[in-house]
Image 1: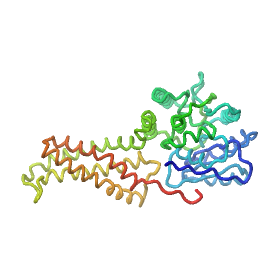
Image 2: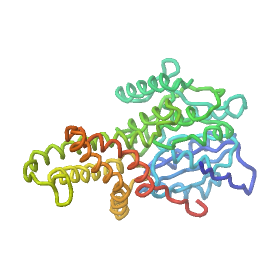
Image 3: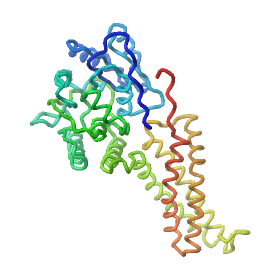
Image 4: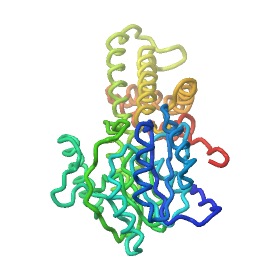
Amino acid sequence: MTYIEPVPASAGPQPELSLIICTLNEGAAIRSVIEEVSDTLKHISHEIIVVDDNSADNTAAEVLELAKTRPNVRLHVRVNERGLSSAAIKGWDIAYGRFLGVMDGDGQHDPDAIRQLAEMILKGDKDLVCASRYIGQTETGLSFFRDLGSRAATWATGLVLKVPLSDPMSGCFMMTRDYYMSARPKLTGIGFKILLDVAASSPVKPRFGEVKAALRQRQGGQSKLDLRVVLDLGALLIEKATGGVMNARFVLFAGVGVTGVFVYAAVLIICHKLLYGATQQPMYRFQYRYDDIVSYSLAIWLSMTWNFFVNNLITFRDKRLKGVALITGLIGFYFACSIGAVISLALSLFMKDHLHIHYLVAGITAALLSSVWNYWASTLLSWRNKKPAPGA
């Protein structure tokens, strides 16, 4: 069941528009961004909710200081959570407004475009309105390679999902609360492409509109675009294209598992070369050889350790474990995967000695068969969702 936090009761009139700004170390820009946007929207009843992923800089302090003179500014700080999509969802869940929007906190989104979006959505004849970099011949504001990558991602998204938007990668858009609620149960909250997530999760074909807008020079902070964002996008596309049959996080977990298979195979080959022939006798009371048991066990353990650290970096980046939590998470991962490890070891030995399958094929096949169990078990024991704090 999907948990949706109820909209809190307001002490005063509810604003028409709730604009969410997701931040991570945007202290250099956030004050000017809020002031500029708030002044641009002064003729519209609105609130600005900053959802901050526990920034290491002065982002939260800047927002709180600004809120002293701007009562329509609110701050929500998330701890042990990361990611623009999940931050936007959190902001919308606690918002007051009849209309919901999102923008970046680094100053790249043009306030004039935001005003145009607000005026368009408030007319009441649109469900979803977006700022698009690809209307006409407008300059996108991206470097050549980032623009090329964005256009390629946009093309792939339209091809796979048939989303009727010229810029489904846009990070600046607004929608009605009803449209958001129609998409809410199926939102993944993974990665940075929240518009794609929303548009592909709703069963409603939206009445939509777009305004032309290029990205401005970043006022502060750093780009969050990296290989992990691309991987998140690919996983999200697969989930939506398969109607949710292939969960996005499982797609990432499986991708990491593929790299773990290479580690597994490498260790198995090395051990086989070094240990094979060390003893020709079966292990006492067992029918299997020492060298096979040691080789498969070491390969399982090392690939398991590899998978944990890479999954912590990529698959569960929004729940990334650090410090003591990293150690306890690793122990939990070992425990979670222990049943899968035993299954993998038993299947490997059985296929090799009784079905006479090549040792490497037997090992890799067994590892793949145990991967589904490892995903669900590790999700529960290592990167399980933390219960929200009271009042969060």
